[in-house]
Structure formats: structure tokens, C-alpha cells
Length: 367
Image (tube, rainbow, N blue to C red):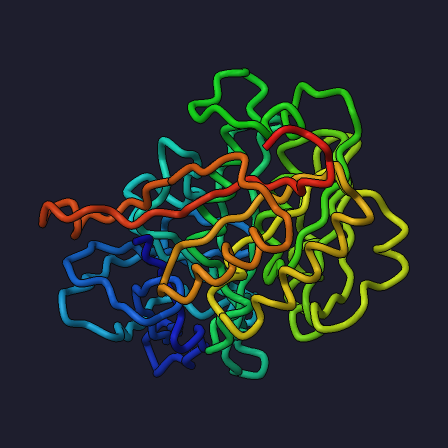
């Protein structure tokens, strides 16, 4: 599985004692996407201080995460105290190459995902906001970074999940402008960066919006509508604000509860692709999800449903049974291996993100 550096306690300014430099205090952990597992090995971590958007490398410390740890507190110097009122951020990673974004592709998924704290300063001596930024290098059309904020609290709905990482890596491969995708895909022609047609995409249960935003950044001429419950709108709005869509692409957001009727502004739009990432973990919501997909395919019968999940329990099979019963046909199934140094050293099989492409039988194509 992929592990994520998290701030259990966000950075807080600590005033300097006489003849000492001010410091920042924080507590981090290295956990799985849902926080239910801690990294069970040794890691050398680097903490760097950002000032005015610049990580000079002059202020950095090394930390050691050890097997059995559940939290790692630390203090890091912030300077000589002459400019204490300037805001700063912390960056924590395993990188030995300075402050860089994590590479994200099928050939190079990050085993440990780096994190940037929110800004903090000495003006009111409060902790930084309970938010954490991730940055990923997609190395595709336009070459810009994918910047993704998530919350540091207990809400798993507003975190990045392994299935989202796997889906973005998969999309990065099949949208590649180099036409050298390593995974053959029925949907590749639709989402390819070389396709001159405008692409209309809807994402259900988008959470932080990682998958839909990444697609809009990688694929020119791509209109993405991100949807989720009202409680996801704040973090979603932040991520849309820092997104860098490709030429001719755009990103919008809207509230959508699967238990309700589809809003008119969504019903009036025809979609080519419907994204569903890590939405099958809750068996109670699966019937409403399948019903929503069925309603959307009545409105956009030629659409393809692109779904990703890291299977966490057997109850998720219920989703596939309902999809079959609702007339959906599986066109494609790929597995994306998730890096895990511990499992590899033990000779254990790696966990995977499963990616599926569905169409509805009403398209009239042969099954």
C-alpha cells in the first residue's frame, strides 16, 4: 500500500528564548490512506522550511521514523528571529533531492507521499490550518504539477485515497501525448490528449477532486464537472482554485447526493465519461450509486463509466452484482500495483487498485 506523511498536529510557532532562534513545533505520522495502518519500518525524513514561497534548503532537519511509531514530534528552527512575522510552511518527505513533487505514473507511483503544511506565522501564534497539500509530477501535456489539498482530520471523505492515485496514474498513461500507453484501454481513444474532440466528464463522489482535476490538467479540450456532498465543497473549492487545466479545458463543481433526483443542470448535460473513484467501500450507499449511474446513462447512453477501487472488504462485490442487474457491461479490467517496500522485502504480494470500464447495454453494441 501507499503511505502518506500526515500532520497529526499542524505546525505552530514557538517564541524564542533569549539568545535562541524561534522554532516551529509539529507532530507527524506515516500512515495508510485511511490512517488505519502505520508504516512498519525505518524511514529517513527531511523537514524543510518554506519562506515567501521559497525552500532554500538552509533551514532543514533530518528525522528518523522507526518501526512501531505512531507519532513523531519535532521542533525545527525558523531563523534568527529578525523576521518572525513572516509566514512559513513546512515540507516533509523522504526525498534526498530537495523539495520536489512526487512523480506519479504507472511506472513510478510514490511509496511514501510527501506533504506541505498550510502557512503559519507568529502574529497570533496559532497552529496552521488542519490542511495538507500534496504535489505530483504528471509529466504530460503542459507539464504542470497536480496540487491537491486534503484535510488532516478524521474525515476520510476529504482525504486522498490509494484508488485515486492508481486512477490518476492510469489516466496519465492513456492520455499521454506520446501515444505509448503501457496499458491497452478501450477508453483511451476518448481521453487521449491527441483526440481533437471536446470531452465532457462527470465525477461522482469526487472528495478532494483529485481524479477529475488531474484529467482536466492532462487532457486538452476537457470539461470536468466534480460532484459530491455539501461537506466536501470547501476542500474541493480550494483544489479547483489551484488547478491548472490544459488548453481548452475547464473545471466546475456541484453538489450531488445520490439519494436525491439528479439536478436539472446536470440532467441537461451529455457526458462522455463518468468517473467513480473509491466510492464502493460503503455497502449502504451502493444501491443509490448504481441507481444514479443508471439515471445518468439514460441521459447519456453512449457514456463510459470509469471506476477505480482498492478492494477493502468482500461486501464491495455487491456493487458489481447490482451493476450487472442494472444492465451494465464490463468492457475492461486492469490492475495497478501499489508500491510497498515492506511487502516486497517480505516476499508478499502487492496491493492493487482495480480499474474498470463499463458501458450500458442500451448502446446496442455487442456484449
